Image 1 (cartoon, rainbow, N blue to C red):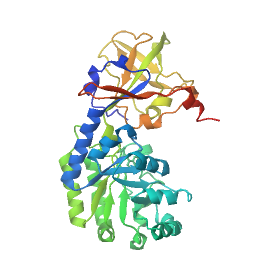
Image 2: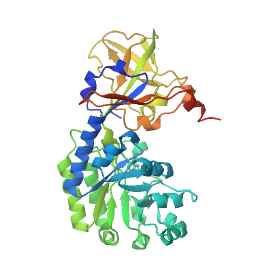
Image 3: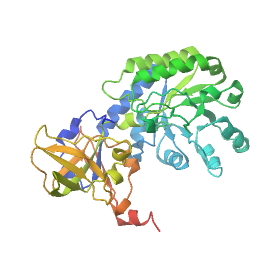
Image 4: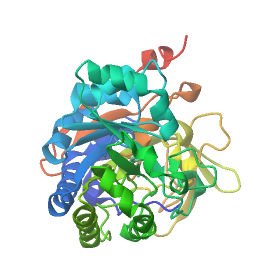
Length: 390
Ligand SMILES: Cc1ncc(COP(=O)(O)O)c(C=O)c1O
């Protein structure tokens, strides 16, 4: 995959020595700009917009998120707890499957709980009834698999053959919608509006009559709405058309779009040597700090990469031979102690970090590119590593 970074933005003038290494630095002004764009889409289209916590759950910015969006969506019990502890507004929870013992709390915390197929709904009907008898108020949703692959990478395509994500739309019958308040579809990844239009064109004729049985339609995430080239007018027109034609409240649950180009990961060169070309070992690890580099895979953009010079293979301090971030051009070979930073690391990287090999977790800092205020929010230490083990 290609990096979707639109460039360094204000980070071009950020002094990397102002933070400890390694460290995520998130620009709250950039997050606010993304949030304002998403609020604008919501206001103009009538859609309600929820932050997908799985992508960006930096809860020190929860109040800022609440200033702009209608709420958040969670992927299970722990994110639902985090949502209720720090975030405001609506909470929608969806997981491909639930543990029976978790569901009562999920129902109590959430405004909407979405199930992966009608059999799950039937299996948990007793828990749903008990919760409602106790006075809890929540909507029930059903996730559909639109069976319309629009992604290029199978790993990120919920419509791939034998997908476990959502009930295949070809199997849906009107009776499956008994007790269902809304439908959920998530089938995109870092995409523009055309794939969404294509999915809608294939779904509308199949589902048209059934839309009368539900109140809302959640179109999931994967919409790169805050990217400079995203066709927001087309999105707004589509969302309005869906809601007006079928009397539906439309929801979007972007994650990445909230934090796109809003954070960097700062690290330090620890060693440089030659093995058929320069190799640099850093305190940043692909496998521990940016696992999507290996998983997607993709090559993250390096801040201020030179146009010409020497190509250096940059990798992490772990034992994994494949702990390689990529090959990058430097005007001069880098030296131990030199700071570097990778762009667009606020989303998905921070939520996926781990301490394999005892590699330290990056600190988390909040910078405001408009005021230049910098706050070190969190540093991790040996105890964070030890206490995940026993
Ligand atoms: C159900 C669901 N909703 C929302 C999202 C957020 O997607 P993104 O961060 O790509 O916008 C995801 C991501 O996997 C998802 O699975």
